[in-house]
Amino acid sequence: MTRFTREELFELAPAHALGATTTDEAEAMERAMQSDPALAAEVSAFRNVPAMLASAAPVVPHPRVREALLAEARTGPPLRVERTVSARIPNWVPALLAASVVLTVSGAVYGVRMQRAAEGLRAGNAELTAELRRRERVLNSLLDGEGQLHLVQVGADTAGTGPGLQFYWNARQGKALAHVFRLKPAPAGRDYQIWALVDGKPVSLAVFNSDAAGHALVEVEGIARSVRGVTAVLVSVEPSGGSLQPTSAPFLAGTFPGA
Image (cartoon, rainbow, N blue to C red; front, side):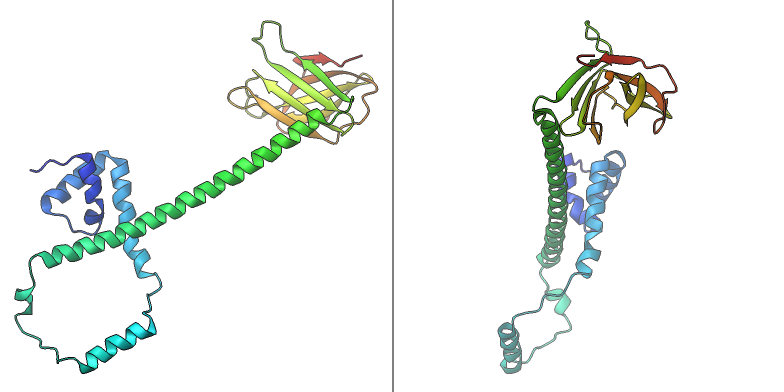
């Protein structure tokens, strides 16, 4: 029984998908595919290509080429068909035909993979563009305050081990940005909610949850352009989607500058 390296098996994938492998090669491929998902996927990809080729648009020859072929057929010597024609086919012809089919299929699979790679690049570029625009909005919230940007440090302990939140209130734009760190995700069915204490009453600013690493960057739109009466920023755990008023005692709090 012939032994094949993994690289050799991958080279046999196109032929195996077309049923053009020897008995030893086919048995080796089937055994290897059971424990090698990547090899199985490679063979599967080649098996899908013949249907793609069958549905592809036919190649139409150039009119001049077509006319030249027809003229040659009309004026050339008659074609003699011999009964023993199959015996006259050299041994290497079937192998050459199989190789040409494999090369055609390989080229088609390569084209499909290149198309998928291009689609992945386009999707990645769209995500990158969206992230850059988001960061631009964040920077605008921080830089375009003109003396009306207020920073509230919420709950971060001096040891740097507990959860914390930096709340940037841009009164000039009526926007805010909350940078959350070391805050584990809220329990199932619960969210975190940020409140401003205005004249002693809590006013909802944002509902959010942190990621698995305990981070969150929360953009807040449409908040008050005046900070008059604001004395603190608070964070509480609320039912999913938030509450009209806090339903639990705030576990993070920070005093508003000048309060």
